[in-house]
Amino acid sequence: MSRFPLVSFSDCVNPAEKEEYSVVVLGSTGSIGESTLRVIRQLTPRFRVEALCAGKQIKILAEQIREFSPKIVCVQSEVEEDALREECHARGIPLPEVVSGSAGLLEVARASEYDVMISAILGLGGMEATLESLARGKRVAMANKESLVVGGHLFVTLRESAENWGELVPVDSEHSALYQILFSLPSRERLRLVLTASGGPFLRTPLEELKRVTPEQAAAHPRWKMGRKISIDSATMMNKAFELHEAYWLFGVQEGFIDVVIHPESLVHGIVEEPDGCVYMHAACADMALPIQYALFHPRRGTMRGPSVLPGNSGATSLHFEKLDSSRFPAVELARRCLRASGNEALVFHIANEFAVEQFEEGRILFDSIVPSVANAVEQFSGARAHGVAELWDQVRELRVRLEELS
Figure 1 (tube, rainbow, N blue to C red):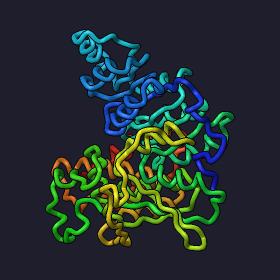
Figure 2 (figure 1 turned 90 degrees about the vertical axis):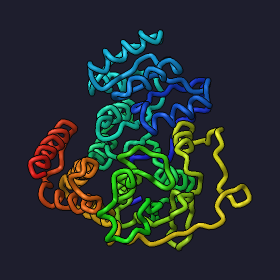
Figure 3 (figure 1 turned 45 degrees about the vertical axis):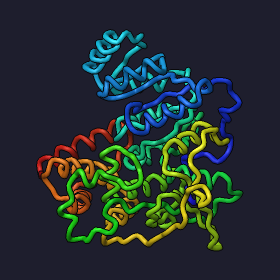
């Protein structure tokens, strides 16, 4: 490693040594949150849900409260607080303590009765609570790449100054794969990390036809079952661009030592290359339950078993790897330029993409205009890097206003 990593490679707490392990789930009604609860459901009574945090999907949250009996829940605002109380009352569900907003998330993070936080809120909403949890020495299973893309430098600052830094364990399948490989190696010097990408639904689509892609087509990922926004980001390769940033911050590796290759089967999730050219590959079925389980049990492996990827077990009969075509997928090179810059280019990169995807969904821009519009925003609006969470949020709000003015 060439820079201090955010993950830890030693002194990990072993949850298997505890009779009961309590979990906080940020983003419980989203794709990762529901996968987490699926894992916990199968591992009960070893794991107990301490808190659930969600946005506006009140009916789903109420059912989760019925099943898992958390002590506290957090919703987006006071409007959702009232809606949740009404929903639980109407269905005869005992209501736990209810809080809301960013203050509510911080209240959950500051509670002492949990062992691990699953950070899976889409976007930047969970960043402050995640930082708070790490500063209090908790394990954070990190599924929220946006916080690292935009505020990775803030995580590093906290990592270097915190007296009781917790454990950051990645949940993204690619970063979990890389972490599992790296954790097992005796030396981590001069390694090359390789992220794999399926290529999405338009890997073979002629470039001139991309302008006719609809939001429904872009959201239909060929391998993974994911939320709509991340599926569109995968179609543009913007999601892989964000994952390059995530690997940069998590593992302390310079961007020149992080590669992306196309792997249509989506069975090999991460590759680590030694200086002598030998490689280690991590292969598993495309099921987020596996990296979630690993984050809960690390440094041991969990007891849930996924389908085998071996040929004799109805798995793969062959694996294919291709070089990334930057003319088809320019987002990755744009991500590299943002990492090499010294300002807030990464913040503009992320927020401008959010805005561009919204415009695409609304029919205001074409699919093949998403990445060029992000590149234009990075060129026009980048400035100084934020020195704290409050300043970062100010930059986000200001940028959204400027993007709206130009649209």
